[in-house]
Amino acid sequence: MSEPEVNTNEEKKGTSDFVEDGKNKMVIKCKYCLSKILEKKTAVYVEQEKELPLMFQGIDRKQGEIKKEMLNEYYHVDNMYIFENIGFTHQVDNYKYLTCADCEAGPVGYYDLDSKHSYIALSRIEHS
Amino acid sequence: MAKTYDCLFKLLLIGDSGVGKTSILFRFSEDAFNISFISTIGIDFKIRTIDLDGKKVKLQIWDTAGQERFRTITTAYYRGSMGIMLVYDVTNEKSFENIKNWIRNIEENASADVEKMILGNKCDLDSKRQVSKERGEQLAIEYQIKFVETSAKDSLNVEYAFFTLARDIKAKMEKKQEASNPTRGSGAHQLRANEQQRRPTSWLSRCSLL
Image 1: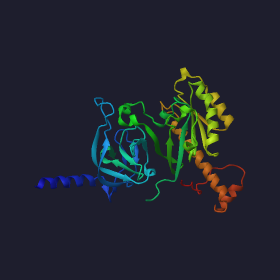
Image 2 (image 1 turned 180 degrees about the vertical axis):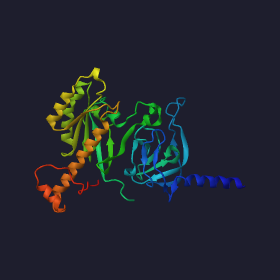
Image 3 (image 1 turned 90 degrees about the horizontal axis):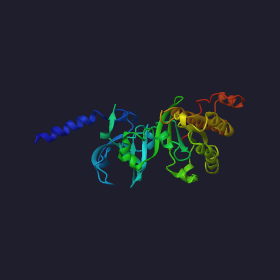
Image 4 (image 1 turned 90 degrees about the vertical axis):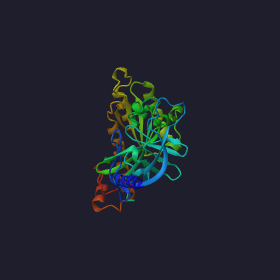
């Protein structure tokens, strides 16, 4: 009975290392080349279930198959010019995927063409 | 939210297919990530932030996305662009000759006061060179455009080129604002406007937001 509560607490504690007043406490960088993506306190932490294609699709996949994973922690950026350095892919359905502007690792998140808002997945970036 | 930058410039990369425009914008396109999901979709544009003489400048940089194969670029693509990098390949004579055609295309389609710069790319491939640096310089003088040889592969002069173009856009913008708002400036400002000699632009004037 008590185990889930412990997990919840640990999770919250983990988030508080990165989030302060609902925003990113630290600078957000690319995991691979440390290119700066966002300045401190420029994005709002949101919890939402959203699938993102895997960064590495692997060579064993079938033609046209896209492997995805469900992620639920994102930073919300309502204006694209808030980003320090970022790449936008061509459109897929109603999204453009976001990549590191330097090494092009990605998707680190997505841009919604309807709302014109961007979302960066916490698990795809580095806090520093 | 408070504004996080001082200026925003839209820049385009233009030139024949294969001159390395994509490598200038997309540094590691041949690297390990090439088998990734991203490389299959391709990148449309990038936002980069640079510090330009103490001002935080955002650059939105667009590649031509293959349109250049039709040897022309439409007005829609040029809309709102403030700077254009004209790129040729120093190992490809034809791409150099076509710079004149691209300049004509820009004159016909882009805003008249768009800032331009010519880049002679792939200057690391000296043994295959077909266009000398002097010819590039000569062309630039002819059109009164700045010129630099670059190597996207070795990251040579690429950053310099973007800084130079951005600085020229900023200077032009500030000059324009001074001209259109002569009464709003300080006394020193007006005095300077009356001087004939060119002096560094004052940081008192701010560059406008898009």
